[in-house]
Length: 259
Image (cartoon, rainbow, N blue to C red; front, side, top):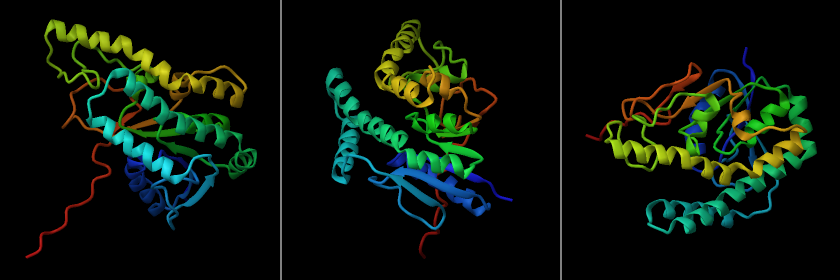
């Protein structure tokens, strides 16, 4: 007998990786409800799931523009402060979406009365985990990694900077002394980025859950982490028992070449 799964995705390419899992859940007889803002790019209605949307303040053109600019910024050199300002503008869109979801009392009541069994989400932004915490439901994450190694902090997973290179450092698992020192500095400074990205959610968590909690604390409550990478392509590092590597889960089977 299938269960009831609440899915809280993130728009864009993140949803493209999550959709195959949602399809497989449907094939196995589960009832799936996808929760998304009514203005989005890729999370469209489907016979495989029930799409439940909530209103937001931005338009589709605004969303398209933000995603396009984010893509361009990823490959173009810019001053650090300029990148930081644009990242703040991009993330504020998701924060506003989360505020409007949690403020929708009718929708929250509907979720409470639906008696879901689990919440399946992308935790890059923590709105899904706030909902899961409110509903007292176990959560399953599908994610590549979180900014500033927040996934490692939340799970207390060992990540020695002596041989686990940090993102954007362009280092390998074989480092000189000074490279290791630089990797350590990157590790220590990443907490500033986390504070910049996620501190606005602290007040939202306090207001909605009516208690003090931080984003890492909520993330630490996940039942399973499905990590979208594999040691075939990644440098080996320690994992916790509830971390499962599912690299390539979104890949499609190759088609036969025409004669």
